[in-house]
Image 1: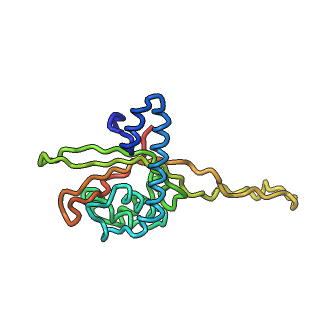
Image 2 (image 1 turned 90 degrees about the vertical axis):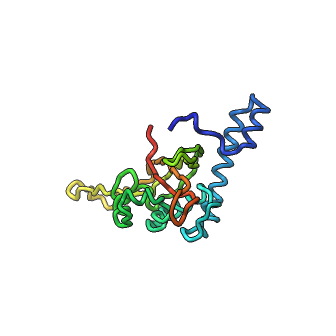
Length: 208
């Protein structure tokens, strides 16, 4: 993504930073904190009631991403698939089972299942030009995900085991899971039952 397309999530804070140019870094940190706090409340409250049946043109991209993350954390891939755009679903032949296999068995996406925590880091908006020359609003958000703790599958060799019964056993759980980041991309649907609503076009691992 071209970094020039990114902007602060709070217009008010941007305006405030222009009044105090020496404090731009401070206002940027505050704006990111407010964005993350807002996403926390969306994840813990409003997304509980959000379903594909309650999706409207007024539903924000942040609410949809929070609902998908809630579904992923609960291992509910039907709930994730519901918010995929028609074009996104067409990529897997509109087949939920195929979508589920892709998510569960692709190393880049498997960490999303039953993850421990997720944080929306930043967002950006822009306008795309459709084939009919009309403008299509696009939203992108960078989400940091902490996968669930995974069991250590390495087994001890019985022949090399110390016979000392008093020896302390080594825990078999890894306590420092890798951190992953993903770009969520949403646009407003141009056709179909959810025309005018934001839906998820793609979720891509962030490249470094």
